[in-house]
Image (cartoon, rainbow, N blue to C red):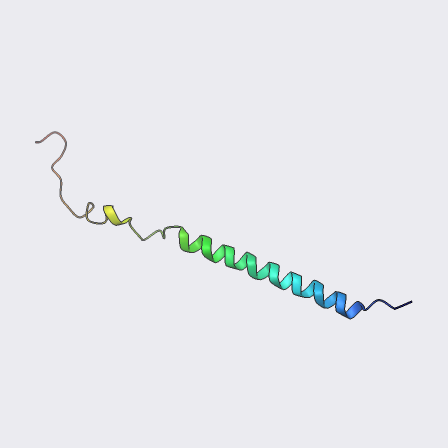
Length: 59
C-alpha cells in the first residue's frame, strides 16, 4: 500500500488559502473603487454648490 504524500496535501492547502486570500483582497479593492469617495461630488451636482441662489422668500 502507498504512503500518503503529506507534503503534497499541505502544498495544496497552502495554494487554496493563497487563492482565497487573493480573491478576498480583489473583492475588497473592487468594492472600494465602486464606492464614491467622501471628497468626490457626483457629476451632475458639482456646479450646483458654487452657484448662488436667491433665498426661497425672494423671487
